[in-house]
Image 1 (cartoon, rainbow, N blue to C red):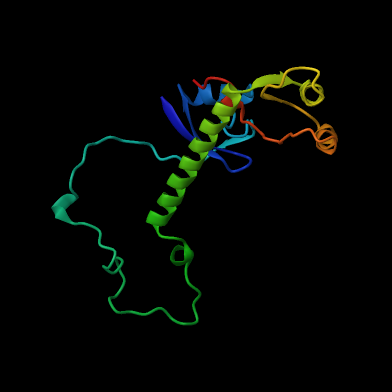
Image 2: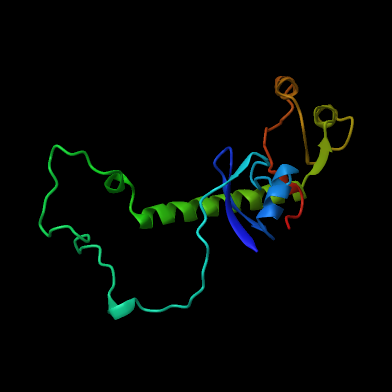
Length: 180
């Protein structure tokens, strides 16, 4: 089983599980690999480190990395020259901040997908008939109900000008169906 870190063209990160590299390539070529948030099939693999479960073992000799210890080969107390710009590693946020940011992004994505699924479950998908159905409900021709569907920008603007309450909302494909 291969677990890949995947990213869509909009920068959404997600995980994909595949039987093999060939399985991933085959699904990618057939357009089956899609972002669960936006439905984009423009997906690329990110850098993934293999997970090797070797058990928790202490470092040899009990040595542990200390952040206040000088780097190997560096002299304690040596200051960098004021003429040298800071290295990229010095300007990057600490690893703990990057991990917290990744966790927050994952939580936001999960919350958005959960909300999208709830919206999909509580509304009727009328597809391309959305503008007509919304207009008919607004004029009292049919009973009001919660609907969703597709409308062009022009159709949505016409509905708003007529006083029909509509809200554009891009629901991810993953909200409308069960993910495997």
